[in-house]
Image (cartoon, rainbow, N blue to C red; front, side, top):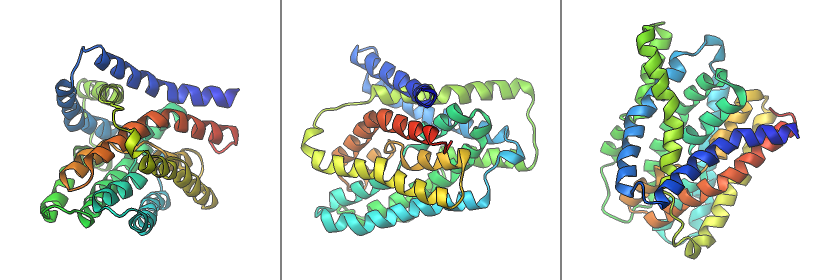
Amino acid sequence: MDSFLVAFNAVIPFLCYISFGYLVRQRGMVDDAFLQKLNSVVFRLLYPFLMFYNIYKAEAASLPGPFFMLFCGVSILAVEAVALLVVPRIIKENTRRGVIVQAAYRGNFVLFGLPLAISLFGEEASSTAAIVVTIVAALYNTTSVLILEMFNTKEKSDLKATLANVTKNPLLRGAVVGLVFFFLKLRLPKGLTEPIAAFSGMTTPLALFILGGTLHFDAVKKNLKYLIPTLSFKMILVPAAVLAVAYAAGLRGVELFLIIGIHATPIATASYPMAQNMGGDGELAGQFVVLSTAVCVVTLFLWVFFMKSTGLI
């Protein structure tokens, strides 16, 4: 029962925020245009505060070790390699190949993994998770561009310019500033840290509210033959395999759970506009985001319950 309650209490806030956004949208109190503008504010302004503050307030002992950070990066690249080997052999259309490969590995770690780790392990986990975000975000953004370019059937985009945009990612910029303050031991006055902490605290609930408001379940049925196998691979098979390897490699506690945060979270919202603008099947990419977000409330609960009941966390 204790394991059930821990899992329930960790996941239920996500369901509340997402459901609230969905219901407000259904009642016509907000529209897509408003949510898109609000989403831009959250991504460009609030997420940098979240990244900066989680690293700024870190204690040196809480930072992840080099082996764990290397494992995170290698595990993502390994899943990408498997998807790149398998998907083109099964899927014939280039417009779908890149989208499915991206969906097989790219999770929404920032929106789900980071706050879930904090919910389970407390604020001491936030710094470790924030450092991991810098690795994950850099890999996701860079490799997604390369993969979508591989299967781009439209006129080739400027790859150099696209990669340059990766360095302008607001999450990475917030993390870099946080690392500068952390390593140089620069401290801000309380009058500034309090509003920064408040902006950081409002980021996750507001982002999940927006996500709930933008959920649309239309036209999912015709793509179920792509959606079900890919989501089963992404949210069940991959986390199970990587978790087993991580445990065998000696990872424990919050680091072991962050592996689940990387690999078992729903497909990143950013994968939809990227696919749409780089010659991929935008409709399928959007459906991956919607369905994985809905399913993750159950699958993340089961992963937390499993790890808690077996003593892994």
